[in-house]
Structure formats: structure tokens, C-alpha cells
Length: 426
Ligand code: IMP
Image: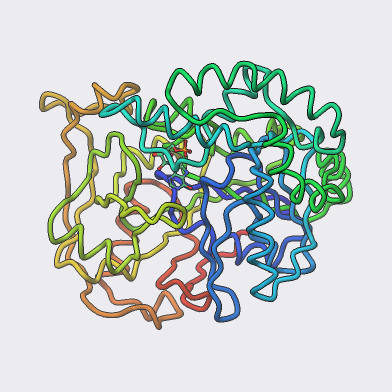
């Protein structure tokens, strides 16, 4: 396989960072194609822990070219901070390029995100507060700025003037902070000067790389159920985390992605508001959350926790064409006595064979569960499938049976070595 995409199959935070880092060691190019610093990958690499937000995970490997591609929304100031942080940790951080077509996320997007969430009150989305939605809105409204504009300061100033003429009215109406062109230009200066040499036409680079049969990894951010179109709308992000969106977000043809590897946790989590049919509360949720360190990388919010949801996983596999998956955080489930798996969705006692497309219909769903006993022992040191306890293997086999997916990798701890490979995928 020369090209592979990684896709989170739940609501994000499935452990994509670890898999991406593993695959990145074999890739020549790692591409991030959508979202912005709402994403947060934690990676354990050479005994150290790194939190990545905008930089693709191949940044830790000096032989990899990392691409921040066309569909991303990039806060230049946050990117510069992230790079400075990585440099301070000894990572040279020179092996990346940024698309001229990527959107620029500016301080007024962040401010708008906050004032709008506050105005929504109980109906808030629970965003990461990083300005992602307002920035994508500007892109669609054609008042957005693009990274290539940073190379032409006069044009950038003109674009900012027209954008602010609209944004300031909206901000003032919400009682938020308004901005001047000078203020934004000044805040961008250092980041602009630093990032300029890295801003290129990344789609030209990527098309050439594909012609040369380079090994390309398309890393995922967020999860399928946060897709603006196919997720639990309106409690979603503002772009599509689906691998099917990659061609459009990178300037590559449809066949550019040869395989899609799905990443799923051994249970479910979500942050922010929105429906979550298998959600748990009380002691079990707390124990899973604590053992799985289920607190947001970006916002530190405690994640909501629930059982594995097979109808939802089958839906995502269907819309994404996923056949191979990595099962993450399996070790966490030794903190419970019995593990539940939702196998069906019922409405009014009848099984449904689709995922409801509205939040109100999803609220009517009653999950039907089966249960399996947990293995109740530490598996984090186990490096082969055969070494796993029988009850653990039974859980893996049950997931494969219920989804028809092949579990190729099992993660039993955050460390790189705490990984069981059943089949190489890249
Ligand atoms: P936004 O992307 O900041 O607008 O947030 C919209 C929704 O997506 C919220 O529920 C966030 O918690 C969620 N979200 C955004 N990015 C991530 C992520 O990387 N992991 C998990 N949830 C995310």
C-alpha cells in the first residue's frame, strides 16, 4: 500500500495519534487535511509525551515531509507557538509545508466562537473555543483569508479590511471585542515572518509525490461522527473528518487514497454536547475515564464515556469503506467487571437498521446490549495476541463478529511498545 488514510470512527480522541506515529515511521509524507487546533494528538515518542494540534504527527520523524493541506484552518499564532514548544523539546520542526489555499484562522474567529456559544446558552455546541466554525463559515462566505495571502501583505490588508467591516458588526451585536486591521496585522507579524518560507502550493507537491509512488499517510483529525454532514448534526465540527473528504481537501484525485484504516476505542467517548446513546455515568464512567486519561488534550474537559456502539461503528464503516481497524485503549477495560456492547438500536421496541439523522430521533433510541466478562488483569505489558487473556480475545472476536471488520492492531497502553500487531496495514 503506497497511500493510506487514518480515520477516527467515533467522536474523536480514539488514539489516532499513536497509530499515526506508528505509520509515520514508514511514511515519506504525512498529510493533515482538515480542521485546525481543535484537534489534539498526544503521542508518546522515544519516552517523551508530545501534544500536537496543527502539526502532522510525522513532525517527530526528520525524514518525513509533513503537509498542512488545503482544507485546514490554521491559526498562524497558534502554529508558531506549537513550533516553538516542539523546538524547546528538542524537535527541529523544519520538515513541513503549508498550503497557500488553507484558511487563516484569526483572533476574531476565536472571539466569535466564544460569544456565539454564550448566546446559544443551553443549545451550545460545546466547541473547543478555537474559532473553527467561524473560520470555515468565512471560507464558505468568501470573506476568509488564505495562508497564501500572508505572502502578499498589501492584499492581506485589503482582505482584512473587508472581512472586519462585517465581523465587527457581528461582534459588536454580541457585545464581543471588536478588532482593527492594525491590531490583527501586528498580532500576525512574527508568525507571518516565520511561516512565509513554508507556504507553498502543497497540491502540486502531493500530486508529484503520488506520481513518484511516495508512501503517503493521510492522518485523521476528529472522528467520523463529528462530520458536518454525516455526524450528529448540529453537535459536530465544521469540516469532514471522513477519509472520503481527503481528495477534495488536498487537491488529489479520488483514487489517491488506497486504503482507509479505522481507529476505534474499546469503548466510546465524546466531548462537548450532543447525543450519545451508550453514555454511562456514575462509578463505571469515572473508573474508565480515570484509567483511560479521558480528559481533552486541547480543552482538558473531562470526556463523556460510554460503551461500544456497534450500529454506529457499522454506519461509519459503511460510509467510509473501512475494512481494517485498530482497537485502542483495550487495557482500560480491566477496571470493570462486565463489558457491555450495544448491538442494536430500538425505537418503540423495534430494531432500526439505520442511524437516525436528527438529534430528536436519536434521543428516542434505546440501545440493546450484550455483556461479556472483563479479564480484570493488567494487559499493558503483553506484546502478542496469543498472550492476551482468553476473555480479552473473546471481546476482540465479538467486535469482529458484530462489525465484520478486521482488527489489525490492538493497543494495550499509551507507549509505542504497548501495541499488538496482527496484520501490517502500511
Ligand atoms: P469545534 O470543532 O471546536 O467547533 O467543536 C465542535 C465539536 O467537535 C465539539 O463537540 C468539540 O468537542 C468536538 N471536537 C472538535 N475537535 C475535536 C477533537 O479533536 N476531538 C474530539 N472532539 C472534538
